[in-house]
Amino acid sequence: MSTHALPDRKQLAEGLDAVGADGWLLFDFHGLNPVAGRVLGLGGMGSRRLFVLLPKEGEPVAVVHKIEMQPLEGFPGRLLPYAKWEELHAALGSIVKGRTLAMEISPDDAVPYLDRVPYGVIQLITKLGGTVVPSASLVTRFAARWSAEELADHRYAAEALADIARSELAWAVTQGGTGLTETALQARVVAAMEGRGLKLTTLPIVGFGANAANPHYEPEAGKDATLAKDQVILLDLWGGKGSTTTVFADQTWMGFSGSEVPEEVDQVWRTVRDARDAAIAAIQEGARDGRTVAGFEGDRAARGVIAKAGFGEYFVHRTGHSIDRDLHGSGPHLDDYETHDDRALMPGVGFSVEPGIYISGRIGVRSEINMYWGPDGPEVTPATPQRNLIRIGG
Image (tube, rainbow, N blue to C red; front, side, top):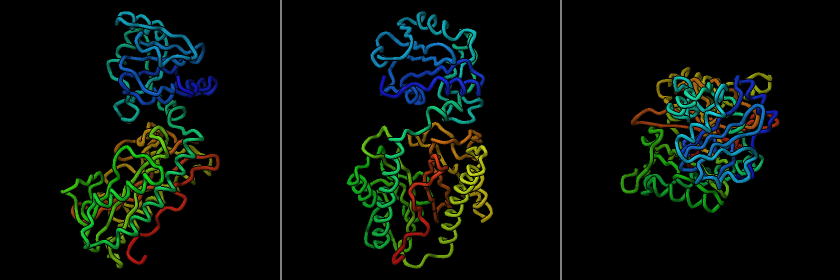
C-alpha cells in the first residue's frame, strides 16, 4: 500500500448510510476502475481481479490473487488470497452474501465516468448473494477530492499555464501571413511548459481559423494550417507540476491575428465568455446560499446564455468535466447535455468550466478555466481568467 490511507471509518459509515449500503466493494482488473486505485492508494493496478470490501462495520477485506500480493503489503485488514476461479468465488461469496454493496455502476449508463464495473462482475456478485447499488456520492467524497498537496500543485500549474498562454498568443497574433504553422506554435508552447517544470500526457491543441471549430482538433505536422492574418487562434493546454500523478490544470485561451476584431468574432467571443462567467456565478452563488449545487446546474447556466444569443445549436458538448488525478476525473461534471449529472458538487472537488461555440468551416471559440471548492467556497483558477481576445496591439 502507498501512503494514502483508507477512508475515515466514521465518514465512510456516513457515506454508506447515504447510499443505503453495508459496504463499498471496490473492484479492478487491468486498471479498468481508476476509483479503486485512487481510494486504495495503489501505485498501479494488477493483471488479476482484485476486490476490496470497505464495510460499515468490521475490518476491511481484500480478495487478491496469490501472485499479486505485494501491492497489498501493509493492507489494514484481512487478505483472502486466491488462485483458482473456484477459490475466487468462494472468497468473494464469503464477503458479499447477504450484503448490499456500493460499486461503480451507473443505471442505464447515465454517467459513463461512474460505469466502471463490467456487467459480468455485477452478475457474479448477485449470483453469490450480494445486492449492488451505485457508489456515486462515495466516489465524489472519497475519490474525487484533492489533497492539500494536489491543490498546491494545481494552483502552480494554473498560473504557469496562464502566463504561457498569454505570452505565446501575444507573440502568435503578430505572425499572421509569416508562415507560422499550428505545430510550430504547439512546439513553442510545449517548450515553455517544460521550462516551467510542467509535465503533460498529450500535446496541447492549437487550431487556426476554421480548425478552431473542431472541438477536439489535433494538428499534424505537414497537414496543419498556416496562420493567416485576421484569424482566430485557439490554444488548449494542460499540465501538472513535476508529476503526472498530481492534479493538472486545464485551460483554453483565444487570440486573433489582427488588430480589429470583426463583429461576428467579437460577438461569439463575448457570448462564450459570458456563458463561462454565468456558470461560475451559479456555482458560487449556490455555495454562498448554503444549498446543494448539482453538476447539471452549471451546464444549464452556461447553455442558457449561449442559447439566448442564438448560438445554442453550436454548443455541442458539456460545459465542464471533473478533474482529479485524471484530467477527466470521476467526480461530478457540469453536464445537462451529454448526460444529466445530478451529483452534488462539494468541498474538495475540482472541475473545468469550458463552454464553446463551433460554427463548422468558419469559427470556433472556447474559454476554459478550472474551479476548486475550497474552505472559502468555489474558487477560479487561474486567478485572472481571460476577459478579452488577445490581438495585435491589445
